[in-house]
Length: 183
Image (cartoon, rainbow, N blue to C red; front, side, top):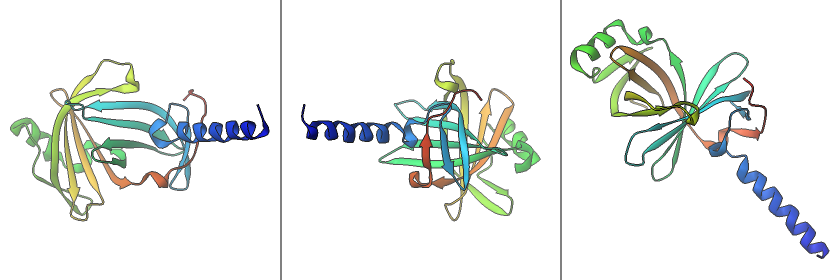
């Protein structure tokens, strides 16, 4: 082994590390910087929508809030960040409308923005990748700007969750580092 071989080996080790510490490869315990905060990955889950359509989700916690990073693959990876909101904040009539009509309304006004139903789907949610899948229905709404979305999830007969979010780009997340998996 010559000197050149020694340096070549180190370069390939650096490339391996760069591939390992990417947004798509986040694991529980990893740390990542986003929006001027350091976040810890506390959960790694996925949604299976059938026909090979998978959405990956990571729960990220900072010192004062929790967000959810999602990655959907279409022709390219599409990233988003969302926060759960109390279901009652989107209107007390929404739940009744879903139960009576099996669907929510086509339009929801939330915090002064009008959201239009964009996509619906049913699938299974796998928390931390090792649990049996939970069935759910999901309705995605988007505002006129295309920069804000609202999601309603139905878990069982009358258990509902809501979240709001925005699309993000992979480059907005930096300093991905391994950490510990204790929450």
